[in-house]
Image 1 (cartoon, rainbow, N blue to C red):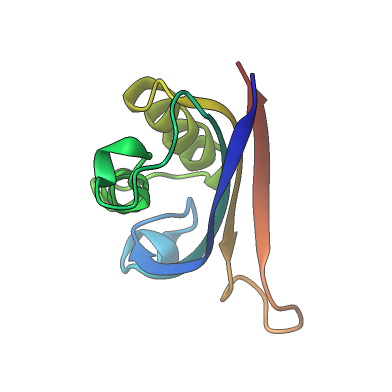
Image 2 (cartoon, helix red, strand yellow):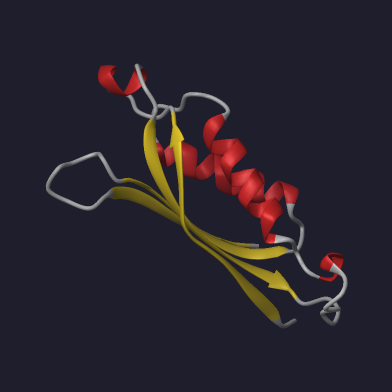
Length: 119
């Protein structure tokens, strides 16, 4: 079956993440990139948002999952977000999700984790 790729690039938000003592006291920025391969089950109707997977809903699920509670490890958060996306959006056939901490080190742009899942 053919697929369409939806891309969210550079989503920036603040989250409570980290296992170190100073990370537990305050939020820190996260950058998120995600790609979703979605089944093309019907033709796109330019007048009907329901003919496609609304990327606003994907973004909202990511933001909610990242900001609802403190998580110690970025690996855990990445897996939780991926599981939520697969659970909530049956149309998603595959996803690639990258979550990065841009403030983790002063000598690099970011450190992060990427996960790729195919159904």
